[in-house]
Image (cartoon, rainbow, N blue to C red; front, top):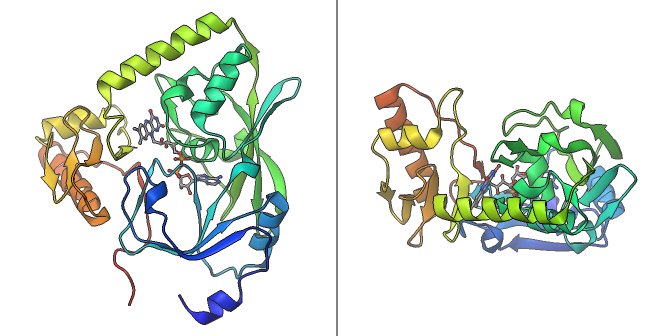
Length: 303
Ligand SMILES: Cc1cc2nc3c(=O)[nH]c(=O)nc-3n(C[C@H](O)[C@H](O)[C@H](O)COP(=O)(O)OP(=O)(O)OC[C@H]3O[C@@H](n4cnc5c(N)ncnc54)[C@H](O)[C@@H]3O)c2cc1C
């Protein structure tokens, strides 16, 4: 971290921490520190920061860190984490407006209590609404794109503004966001049903998940996207990778598309294992797997 970078940090009201430990946020519980962690006081504070930070500084937004692998050398530039100020839910006539820091499970429970349907699938997906929109997260045939109508974002060029779902060009685990934009709020459809039907669906989803995924392990969810016409877990199984391990990282026996940190793995163990799985699947079955987990940061700490 150079001194020019530090002296040019905009004067904000939120918290700034240099060399911040962020591995504890991450589901994998691995990775080096963030050069600078910024927790904005509110939307305006974040907007001011983004408009005044030099354009050549890297910006990374941390949600619930359930779909990322922070590499051992830490995250360069600025890491933004949204706090309590960004976790409000409220209703308009046709919309649910949900802050980016709201947990998916909190939203799913809120919808159930208010007899609003369509949010049951979120009950088993870890992380926040910001991360869910950015990843177009989904499960059991439903994706965020099925319920989203628009989002409010902020970036250094335009300040705070809204964009529609169509502008995001959402597809399977893919969203086109403007450069260095931070999602602030998501606007969702509101459809109503009886609470007991919603409760039943949530229970079903939770029990299937418990049986089929290592939900109690240190993991990053699905490691790879499903290639068109294939299931990633099946390809990985057919390539003989079930239970394969490198260092403290292992391919889950329960769900082969999950890598788990089962014994003090480093980020490097996890990434090397993922690359080995990719290599074996391609070698044996000729299918190229694409990482779903977002890998961020430097491979090794800079001295
Ligand atoms: C046990 C387990 C089960 C899982 N099951 C599923 C599943 O069934 N379906 C599924 O789709 N995923 C699943 N996942 C993956 C993960 O939970 C989702 O992708 C989730 O939506 C990520 O949200 P997050 O807040 O944790 O984002 P993070 O992991 O923190 O970040 C993911 C991406 O979103 C970006 N981001 C986060 N917040 C914002 C913001 N406010 N503005 C801009 N960008 C932002 C980050 O920069 C990063 O690029 C699972 C993960 C685990 C650990």
